[in-house]
Length: 438
Image (cartoon, rainbow, N blue to C red; front, side):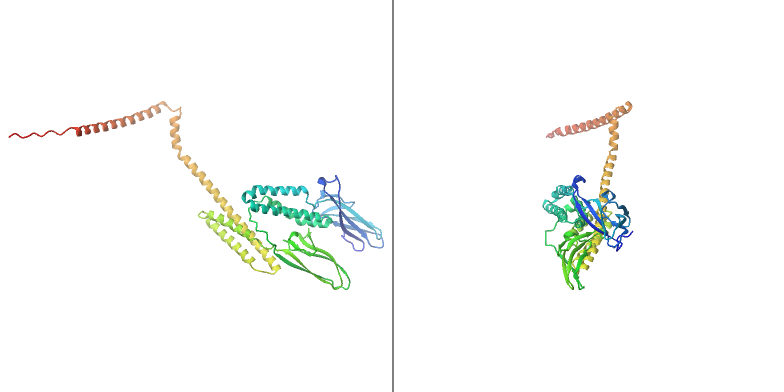
């Protein structure tokens, strides 16, 4: 089967939206993809057609193929429609493929996402630092509003709306992750500043001697999202699902020999925030300080030294001014280094977790040893208060007590007697002396 047998049948993709009341839940719109087959030959022709459907569609999403057959391509990871069609000379035929609308953010999804942001703000952000949490919350809500606004402004074109949705599908997931992320709510948002721009130049010329229609399609670096394009020069920012890249698109007519140059201003997203570097360094140092003097100190020191080296290399690299392509290349290297440092910090924190577990275990063992040392006391208590001990044992125990009391009493009596005799001797007056006779 040929996708486009030249001179016979041309398959042209167009699309339109109709609203079907009561047909879709939540008042979703359905989309009809029009596959147009045209026979430009002067005689009747029978040819095979094949058309690939958007990759987001599953078999359940394809409601009606309008007589064409449906199959799945493992290589392209999408469904396609195909079939044989016979057309008369200069005849065309339109196949209306009825599919579900998978390219819209619903009000329920927006409300649910904002509810998650509110929960994160109340439980994680506000108790930690209310002022910073207000800024972080506002940023997430602005991102959602931007996506919803982009969807509404792209409603006039299915192609634009699909491209916009594809560009922000990952962004919606990132917002969802941040909404309940402890690290996000405890991060330190920098003051809003004017964005630093990096400029890309697009040049186009018409070397022919006739008026020519141009369709510009210039791909952007993989990190760029549509909102990062600040100065678009009337270009549309769209998204290529196959390449997973955003691109600039524009149609225009250029007169013979005409040349144009466009300067696109893109926010400099190719740098790692210093606050993120500082936060990672603080986490590592905090864990390392706890592990000093423990059996993990040597391993912790090795990890901390590596973390310090990795973060310092990022700071040194970002202080160098480079051309835009070198700047992007350096950022990607630094991002990889940052990820390595982050893994080392997580390893250090896991060592700290093991150390704390050992401390808790040793505390439990000390308590058990103290309980064991009290076993002797327990045995005495058992003898004293067990009602089932033998009578001979009781009388023996009583006899020893009476003997001990008797000995103590005898000793006390003797001591008292000796003290009394000594006192009496001291109290008697000395004998009187007689005067000798003359």
